[in-house]
Image (cartoon, rainbow, N blue to C red; front, top):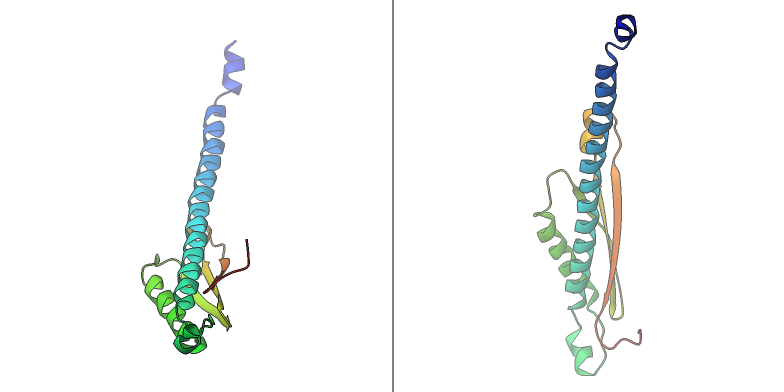
Length: 146
């Protein structure tokens, strides 16, 4: 009976080490996944806010005649201003870029790109980045969409 117990010594520590590696890996995925979700939601919010701000820049002369047409230059400037204000409040580990803004008649499209290196991946020597692209469209006036 004692001979059987001698062969099992150290197995508990092996199971403990393997379990610990699995738990640490799951924690790393949880933290990096949370950072990804924060970055995705932040990019959406920034794109939405920029598009809505730009959609408020109507051409006053055209609006008086009942035509809802955006002033392209003012809409682009306003959208970029709102992006810059929101970018100042983002976490330091996430980088966002104002990629594109298009204005056509009464609609504005804004595209924001965000990128960040994962926390645990970069600590372990894995060099890759997570990239998020978020677009938003806003319009002024009466819409025929349902």
